[in-house]
Length: 324
Image (cartoon, rainbow, N blue to C red; front, side, top):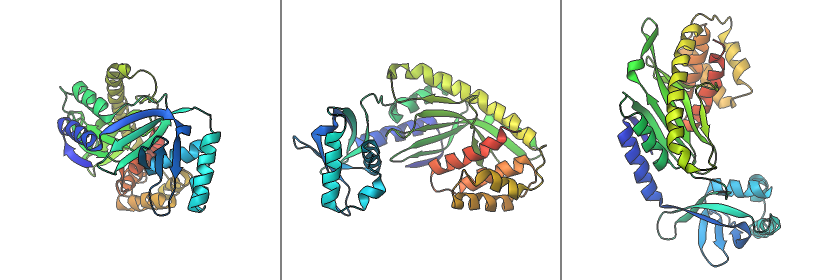
């Protein structure tokens, strides 16, 4: 689900609708009470010894094979019978009686799915708990949601504040915002990052600096969430203002060979396709300054198909911003 140019109330509603569609239920159980089957061309099947069966989503499969020390690529090369024998042998050899949280969803008859397999210490920080709190904190502001994406593994929400517009050079305006990212399946913590948006091309950048960034792990007491969200939002807003000033300084930072600078910085941090996209983006608006180099990363990120990849490419570029 993707939302663009909307408000926080609509985003809250979208999160609730998604949760109702998924109908999530957590089951804490011993891993060795389950049998796993890996037929060719189908989703794996997890069956409790008492009889309940679920399909294993890709993320849950990866979490299981990682926990058992069996790389997915190795497992997939085995025959179905050997996969069955190997995985279930490893499950029985795993810490006997070890309790796991099976994050399940019920998508209708015969469509029950384990979407994640995490430790029993995992404390869900669900979108339907987090997003309404963000909306409450920002209720009296001019906050606008420029983009929100909910998928199987990640949630990304970009909020901006139009009244914070700053003209860093004639005709080039940057506004502050907050990037909120979450994973209900244990891939990452709940993150609040300073965010800036350049209006001339709608490029966005998420900060990599610890200043203004908050990470809330999915462990511990969920009751702390309200105060934590309030502090995280306020810290991110302050950090975003700092980013605006860094962008202004980057305009005065000349770069002798921008293409080389992009290659030197991006080669070890991006895939080849991502690096090509950033280099192509620089040719759209060549500018031999640090600002121009950074803008190539943010413009290149816009061509990425999903917000998780966009988020990661932006953060590679943001490492350069810290030098401004």
